[in-house]
Image 1 (cartoon, rainbow, N blue to C red):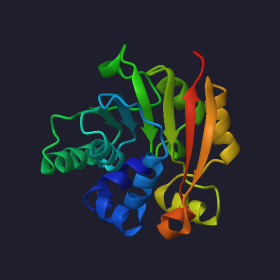
Image 2: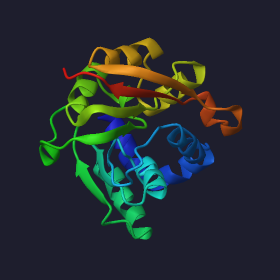
Image 3: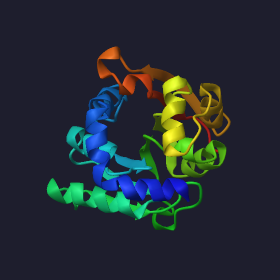
Length: 210
């Protein structure tokens, strides 16, 4: 409840916050390290999409890709839709209000090539959520997760935002236990300060069905 109220209240200022802390530039760095299919019409799910940071960055790289943006907070989704409208991208993205821990009826039977979670798993049960999201990813599809580091600065952010960062081993185990291989760890260079103190990335590949 605290988290939902907090995100609802900060939705209007969230994009400015992402710009100030250098996260927008960091997202481009992360995405350049994902071996995306040569087919520009790949299907992407941005889960915990917030105001659309990853959604818009992916569309800038692959303008013809199909994106489904999912978030549990209506105010965040409203801001995302406004950001898409300002960029004339409203026809490029399907937005869904849903809880990623559980089946999502609007996309039942869909299979995605790439799932991106830029700030979701700290707020949920990782095993439950990864298992559910895996059902929407095709075999050999990619899952990029950008967790908050479990260090001093990550714990400060978590205290402010109402969550506790997971240990790196816990995050990775949630994926490997649910049919994924861990392909790489992505560490942000210091030039992306201050977000480099807080965020990192992990790229996984779905190698078996669960």
